[in-house]
Image (cartoon, rainbow, N blue to C red; front, side, top):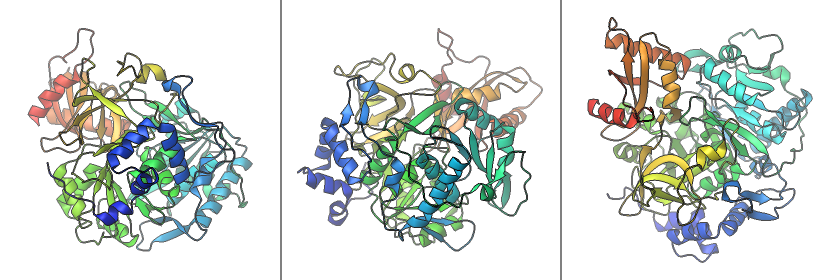
Length: 605
């Protein structure tokens, strides 16, 4: 396996990683990583300084593990609001660049973003919300969405983030778990020439009072008590951030595990430091860079994009349409994007259609890829779109606040592999007997800044720690990914060790899909699995069913399955194939053995 890209001397010496190596008299990246995990307090104290995190009261200690590594406390004793660290540049610096279906780019200065954020924060206060009251955001990744997110946290109101692609059923589940007092949404989403209702879904989900942004010219009728954003917005432009502690809640995100209801994962006031750290070191984001990552606040990469960009004094680039056609390529070109994040399935579309081939992306310094396993040929194609720039493979989780395995701009870049464990973090690969191996399940070695300590609707210890083996006397934390360590020390993703899957970059549990499919009259029981194509790349959804109806043909059954998944879960999920089976393979305890069905589906595929 040969490298597709090698860093030259200029790239290395201009990198944030190299600056950290010089500061600590370290002569290699490998020695920096070792130092970062052997001296965690010192590493994170320097990182906080590198990021210029703004404190009202400085921490008494960087790391306190007196309650055990499961309950590590970071930046103990400090008082701050992380949003203050998002506004560190000159007022005239560009903070956001966006394009809403027009050719003209709209540039928002830091001062304009801060003023807008303050007006929204005052609106929340004037509407009767107090620090600690939750608000929800269910809307596309727009300038307004970013400002609302910043404003709520600045006002001390934790944000419940919900993806705009969810059905009303999925929205309702998330609202019941978190009980926000207010929800921000949009009347319609205008995308690819289509008008998609969003406010209507929010109403069907029995949402609390809604503040509705007009997405276009369409007229909307609101429920009694709901208001349009323009009439909600305060004119008061000054707002002092509510001072928070390091453990205070700022965001609730959702991630699927192996049970039907999604895990509600709290992000505290310190988690954005992990986002910004990964952006600073591994993505080499620097002042005045322009970072674009098509995403949504409902996924962790939405908040990650905001914090990793703004804390590192870079601009956030937002494109309101789907990132598939030529319009997106032109936006990346004209906005002079320097770091572009992708989901591998998007790259596959670009490669198959050639839609990005004609644009000048030379301003890009690196790409990043996350959400799914990638295909080497597609990643090499991506690299050439910007005249051979590296792809930072990046894998982590919502409950980590960033990545645990990633790449750097100071090491040779090999398509679809990770060159390093993330700085400040450590993991081990174990086989089924709990022994260290070069291919097996990944277990994190806490403490790591950014790791969750609680879940709103689960027993956190049971989910992440119960039943785990010890490693050299150390407590391990379960995550669920499988990795292979290659002979050169790099890593390659091997999918999920549990029954969760990534479909189009969205993590979803098998059980969530099966619960929906089992509602169909002709389905006795089902098993949903993701299968990686033989050539590599994003997983494809295959469904096994035990059928009670022989009158319908397989095509009709597959059509019904696709329809109910689209309506009740997510229109982005598509079953690629249906396999009928007499009985599902089960363990002695009755658990469905999805790995056996996965092997069969791979052969079918």
